[in-house]
Amino acid sequence: MRRWRRIPEPNRLPGHPQRDYTAAYLRPWPRRYPLAIAVTGLLALILAAAVAFAPRLVLGWDLAGHAPPADRARAVNDIRTALLQGLAGLGLLVGGMFTWWQLQVARQGQAAERFSAAVAHLGSENLDVRLGGIYALEIIARTSAADRDTVTDLLSAYVVRHGQVAAERREDWLAARHAAGDEARRRAAGDPAGEPLGTHAPDLHAAIKVLARRRPKAGEVLHLSRLAAGGGRLQFARLAEADLHSSDLRSVDFTGADLREADLAKSNLSYANLRHADLTGADLRAVVALQARLDGAILRRADLAGADLSWAVLERTRLDHADLRGARLAEADLAGAVLSGAYCDGDTEWPVDFDWRAAGARIDLAAPPPRPTNWLHRPPPVSRTAEGDLTVEH
Image (cartoon, rainbow, N blue to C red):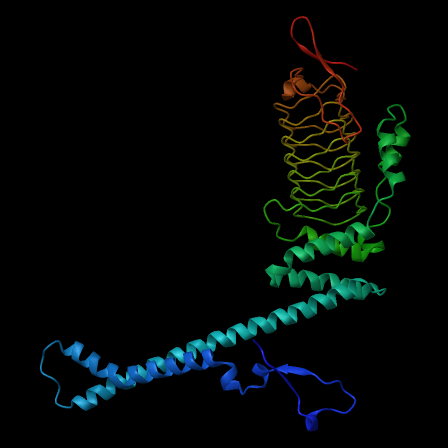
């Protein structure tokens, strides 16, 4: 049971209440840490005994019954000197380890201070300060693996907050996509971005570029849907599996970008440069990509159901096993495109005089119906004919 003691009256500060302290707190430090003192003393005794007696034991074990040297005391002292030098080296090693640990603690503290300063800069009204904060976060993510995920989440939230495309604009794209007889309206929906993103929103452009050139982890998904990034410069971007659906990506330069398994459904890619980009397995349902450059791109197993690729350049594009049901490829340049195993249907619009069967595309009624672009859009029902063939009801 603890015994409580009060501070003697002469030691009390005037105007302060009386405080109680345990008897253990008032004991001298040797009595407060008896176990640590006992362990330290025991280690000191062990080292002293080793220095005093170990050299003789080592000398006897080394002789192994042979005649001792003429100067036995000198041999023992030589062994003791070597032992002391070894202990001194061990002490230096332990000291170096403690120094390294202290440096790591100091480095973590400096990283935390830099991170706090960079986050504070993101909220500044000065554009240059915000840009400095964004690039400071990139440096922190490269030098500190522990802060990498936090920086990615922070910049993603910044991009989503400051770069959202208006809902009315997205509805205009989809409405123009279904305006089959109104070519002027369709072209207006895919007008190129009037001003580069780096000109009218440099901070947003910088944040997107930092996210696009990061080193992603396996299974990491960037949630950047409904992004207004028209006119951005994102060459060789690392955006595999990124969620970019319903985004404004007009005139974006995606040359050589990694967009494998990316979700680009309902996005506007008109006039975008996707030359030699990797879009393997990408979700491109209902995209508007008028006059987009896709020559040399890889679109294997991509879902292009309902996509509008009118006037797009698809020279030497890999479209094998892609889903082209309901896609519009009228006036598109498909010279040298690979279409082996690609799915199409009666609603797929091909360029005039283009033999899609010879190119390898096929109609397969046994294939599952096209996926809906959202949970409100149900796929058309499928029924079987008397012969057992599957047909899609319109």
